[in-house]
Image (cartoon, rainbow, N blue to C red):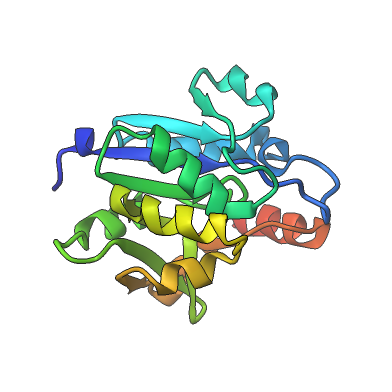
Length: 194
């Protein structure tokens, strides 16, 4: 078990959700805003939690909020901004739209920390999930270079780092469900209540 003081939690809440028409972190599932689920999953495992968002409404959660350094450049910018503000080598990055996430899933990432991987990400439904992942602070230079070249695709940035995937068992895959549409919100509610 790693000392939790060595990990910073970074929640990306900067996305302008065009499909939901609202800030996804504030969507409600069972009387709790989405972002609270990410906060609750991180809390037992990390020492510090940062929220990356230009939206000052997130200040109500009482956590340090970091503005995006490069505006409107998606998760590459969000991760870059979070890593820059972080004081630790290891950083657990989560998006704010995965309300079924839990500490048990995140613990699997911690259990797989090694000396070479710069990024350790969950793999669910056969796809890597770069927004449920541990990032070493060192990738900040790589991400910065991509932003300078106007490359905003996170998967491209990750390809140039040493990364590994942690495959989830089938029964845990639901925990990584990403909510982008009203239908997905309904599916999340159904899954939550089962």
